[in-house]
Image (cartoon, rainbow, N blue to C red; front, side, top):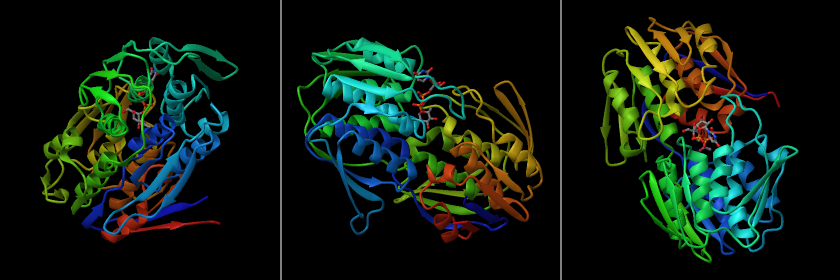
Length: 426
Ligand code: UD1
């Protein structure tokens, strides 16, 4: 298996182009199932999860073609065309590797009147059920059966309009409900909808395909169902979590990075905490410029649904706050069991104590390199960040986690001065 080797202590300076957002890509790709016309997505990141989603679409009978970006553009361009949907089953072997596969459920029932999707099963950051996805489809008229590890949703005459009231905010369930409702008969209302920028990106793409959606960006979405949607071309938004991660890299290494394409409005809770920690964040013509000023100050953070502080930035901030002068507190309210980076950071010299949902981080003078491994994507990134400032060499194992969500990680960091390389054993 590949490893990433980092020799810490280099100050990072320069510009990093932020890739298309993984989480937006994973909800824009299933939109191809909603129409028999081609959907072209620009600025798609080159990531393992995006490839897996492409394979899942192929499995369902959707044709996909990819090309490189135009001059001056980053990312890839993919055209998906679901002239016919051959299969309505998302098999266990694909869903188990990528939880977001469950996002074919809504579009498949809406277009085909049925869908069978494997239950995702356990996951490293908590048990992550799909009950809210199923409740939403039921509210829109689907009949749900769960048997032998699979969920079967059926709506033989098509979905109807309905009201979906989510008891808690769920990004994925909101996405499934929205993708289903756009082809339902009549008007649907989604209450307590997630407001993450990726949901807005999804709504904008659906609108480009002819969907009627009101309340975009708010917690109440009103959808007037259409008989059919048409093809469209849509550019995926910049990845706010990738941008936030590199912002931490600038702050931790005493450096300065311009994050090309990053948008302050998508990152307001993160930039507020960076500023509180003593980091300078400025909007530029091309994105955001993040620079270390003096030392880092401790802060208190609680993860929340958007516009609150994202759970997907918790691990990276923990690595950063390990270097602050004083004690920080992070409380994780979205996922249980999302502190698996704590023992690994501790092996690099961090002082962190977890009590229930709260982690208390005692700032230390410095970190030291060590062989480490992580069990999820953002946890792996926190170890890379720690490695960038640690004395000596850090070896990060299980690089496949990073490949799921950070495009050309080593290349981007090398270009701004990091001493980082990937060693393949193949
Ligand atoms: C998405 C993101 C993930 C991010 C998370 C929260 C993608 C591909 N992934 O995940 O990176 O960390 O949002 O911002 O976009 N829940 C239920 N029942 C359900 C669904 C969710 O109880 O049916 C719970 C979850 O266990 C969790 C909370 O709701 O405690 C929020 O999860 P959710 O917003 O659904 O996360 P995902 O969509 O899986």
